Image (cartoon, rainbow, N blue to C red; front, side):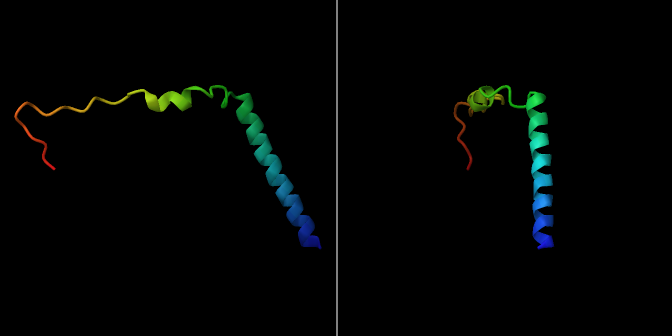
Length: 60
């Protein structure tokens, strides 16, 4: 019976730690911008692929 009480106490302690970290993230602005990450993949950030010169073929 003692082990059940100990496990419940440990799980409540871990849950409070996670709740504290979640609250800290909300207060620091971690979840303020919910729009930009969903459209970030639509923007080109890299260099465009070079097209082959006229007369050259792609080598596979």
